[in-house]
Every structure is written in C-alpha cells, then in structure tokens.
Image (cartoon, rainbow, N blue to C red; front, side, top):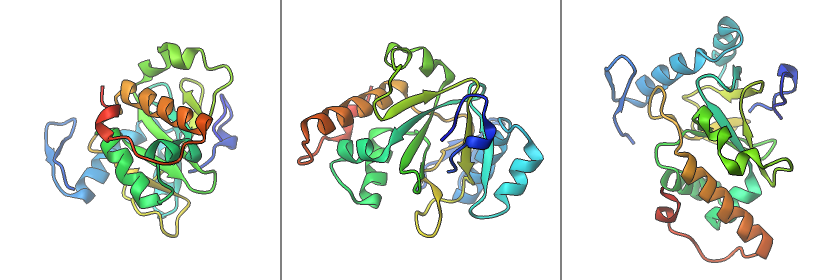
Length: 205
C-alpha cells in the first residue's frame, strides 16, 4: 500500500493508434508500451533503478505521484460490484469501456486497482472530503506507487499487470468517469446488489 513519504511501504503492484509526445504515431503494442515506459520513467524517484526493475517481467518501478499524474486506488470488490461480475477478463473489458482511454493496472495480491488520473483530480470535492475513504482513495503529492512494466498486460503468473494499458504518453483517465464508477460500486456494495449490469456509457462524462 502506498503511503505518503514512505517509499518502502509501496504495494506493487487493439489496437488504437496513440500519438506520442513527439508527434510520432505509435501503432504496435510494443511501440506504445515503450513510449509509455519512457513517459512514466520521468516520475521515477531513481530512473536507473526503475529501468532495472522493469528488465524483469514482474519488476515493479517506484514512481512518484503528484507530478505527471495522480492515481485513484480502488478495492477489487468495489470494481467488481460496479462491473457486476467476478470474472477478471470481464472486469478488464468493463474498465476499458467504462473508463475510455484510462490506464489501469491491478495488484492481484493486494486486490486493488489503480487508475492513473490528472493531478488536479485530487482537488475535486469527492476526494478532498475522503478522510475515511470507502474502498477508494486519491494518491497525490507525497505518495509513491509501485507500477508494473507497461507491456505486462496479462493476469496470469504475475502479481501486477495492466488491465487497461496506456494508449500513449500522458493519456490519463477522465476524473468524472472514475468518480461515477466509484459511486456506482459503493452503492451496489451498500445494497448488496450483485445482479444486473450497468452499461459502460453510464460512466462517461
């Protein structure tokens, strides 16, 4: 679990064209992963250490929140409630539709999802008021995040993987869509309603 100013406590954790920061179109998944890696490494506390970690498939790089991006940490039970399914693949597909363009990775050991969002997300009322977060919390300045290698996109035989890979450098989630997903998940858990489904369009801002 990431904690403010406590790097040692971190919990590790198509193809649409994406436009890289240089203006070059990135087509192949491998190229997109490389472009995303380069961008993410700018948030590393120690870039060489992060690169070394990512040389291993299960490597986790320690990245700072609050500069290039923030993150919303959401418990797996809340996400599954919003998706109305326990199936990992179906949840991944739901997230890709409900949070279009949003990069999301999961820590399967800790059972938490992490959505990368703009830093300004933390100034929204729903996150400022969360002194006792109900299964969802914004991680911003002063927090560190254990991030898996961008090309690790399959859940098998790994602790952390990208259930929704980054489309390209700087591509982040729409804050409204994330808040709506969290709200629906909380409502379903509160009412113990695990049946039915909500169309992904209901989460779009």
